[in-house]
Every structure is written in C-alpha cells, then in structure tokens.
Image (cartoon, rainbow, N blue to C red; front, side):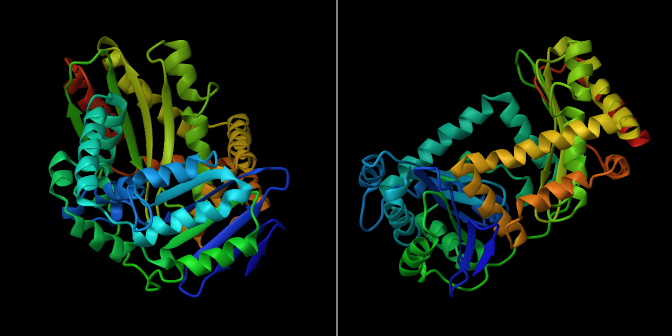
Length: 426
C-alpha cells in the first residue's frame, strides 16, 4: 500500500486492480467509480463505436437486477449514476451518501462482472445511439471537433469518432461486446476510485470480495498514434461557419506538456488571452474563440477554434494564424504568470468536488501509474519558464497543420489555401 499526503491511499489487489481513496472529513457524500483504460482508440476497425455502446449497456441489466431495478436501487438512496466514454478511458460512476458506499460498489461490481447484454436492450440502445449520432450531425461545433480528430489522425482509431457510424452501430451483435470486454476490461487497466465520506480499508475489503475474479492478464496496447495533419472542408447550410486549426501536440507524462498547456491558455484560455482580445474584443469576429491542447498517451493535439458569420470567414482564418505566430514569438512574462495562476486554480478546484477528485485520481493512476501530489503539480507549473513556452510554441508549427471548416463556405477555398500557405511559411 502507498500513502500520499495523509488522506490519499492506494492499494493494488492481487489481480492488478488498483483502489484509490481520499477521505474528505467534512463531506457527507461520496463519489466513486471504476475507470477503465480502454476507449475508442482500443477498438479494431470493425469495432468502431463499440466502447461507447458498451458504456450505454452498462446499466441495462445484470443477473441480479434489470435496468429499472438498478436505477431504483441508486435513486432510492438519493444517488445518481453516470458513464462516459473517451478516447483512452471509459468510466462508470456513482454519487451518493457516504453510508451508502457499499451499495454503490456492489452495483458497480455487478455491472462489470455480470451484465447480461440482453438482445432487446441492445436493440433499444442501438437506436438511442443512432439518435445521438444524428444530434452530433445537427451540432456544428461537435461535428467539427470529430472531423478535427479525423483530419489529424486519419485512418487510425484515434481519429475515429467515439460514437461510431450508423452502419457500424447497427452491425454490432452481443458477441462483439463480449469479445471486446474480455480483451480490454482486465484488472491491470482498471482503477476503482472513491472520494468523500469513505473508508479505505472497508472499500478495499469489499472490492477484493467482489472484483478479485476480474482477469489479471495485461490487456493489449493500442496501435501507436501517427499524427498526419490535413484539411477537411464540409459545406453546410448554417448560420455560422465553424473553424478548427491545429498542429501536433505533446503526450502526457512529460514536463514539456505543462508549458504547452500554459501556452494554450494564454493564447485562448480566458478573456485576457490573445485570441479573445484580438478576435472578439478588437474585431468582433466571433462570440467565442478558444485554444486548447489535448494530451494522449503517445501524442497530443493543439488547436484553435472559433465560429463566425460566413461573410467574416475570410478575415477570421488568417487572424487566428497571425495571433498564433505573434504569440509564439512574443509571449510575455505577465501572460505566463496569468496562465500559470489559472492552471493552478483549475487543478486545485478538483479538491473541492468529490467526483472531480475521484476522476483526477483515477486518470493519474491510469496515465502515470501514480497519484501526483498537489505540491508536485504546483512546482511543475511554477517551474515553467518563458523559454519553455516559446520552445514548445514554435515547435508546434514544425508539424503539418490540421484544418477543418464546417458551414457556409462561398469564399473559403481561397481562404483555406492562403492559411495553409501561411502555416507552411511560418
């Protein structure tokens, strides 16, 4: 057992399943869940969307409870549950009173080891997901985000949408879910995290009793990511045109990723950021404009996004690149200090929410193999120097660009060509 900062405790069961808890003495509720280090990028091509379908099926019935009984058991004690599929993780979570933690663990264990995947429920959930896919098609910024990943990592699982396609979802059978589960849901790639009014020893004892039967073999790793870059132009009859432009980023687990996060924040992470001031405040070209960095296990993706009126598209696109170029060359100490302060608050805010903290602990264990002490994170943020930010910022533009446009584009082919030329010249 490893003890960190007094209240955080980590235990590893014999099969490799890790249990992490943090007791919050003045909190009456608890947040707990199981995080699995398997998501969309762990799918074979024929399994596109299967991780998400499995998440949907999680609370649809076990050998002990049907879907309604699961919902009633949790809600009878005032709790609620949720599940989420990501690129590299899937989580199943419950929030309830501290005294009801054993019930939450019991239900989480039940769905992980004894889900029935009933054919009738499967047919209904397929239809629900088809509606979800349709919703994304009707939401331009969500659609643009999916296309951004596709353009950046073309032809790879990392670049495929998490939801799948209507064709792939409709083709899934129960046996496909069972095979995916057996291959990826193994104890060494799973973390049970519980935060709030919890007792570590009691949690470990119950988890050992209920989940020791999970396979202890190490799951196969996904295929390495290969950033390619590229452009996708999708003309749609919309009120606004959505833009995303980006470059290859950095994987998590490296100190340089902190400098990259700081650069993304000072470029487009708040009202004082360069993009907000230039694009919205000075030019009025967009209601919202953003810069971000997504870190994955072996790669990353840096991007800028904005939506604007079609007639302003030709002005907005080069402005985004101009601000990026100018910021990379001329970031100031004051900007870095502001970004650092905001990143500290964002990190430490998780300490005030049991669910946010449970998520943070589980993701750190899955990604890094350990829980990061708060002081260590603060030291790493304080250690970011101007030269570090300038180095990662200028390194971005050495990669091929990724560019996505969704919406009306009467004059955009020329604009796209100009932006791409400007990127290469940088």
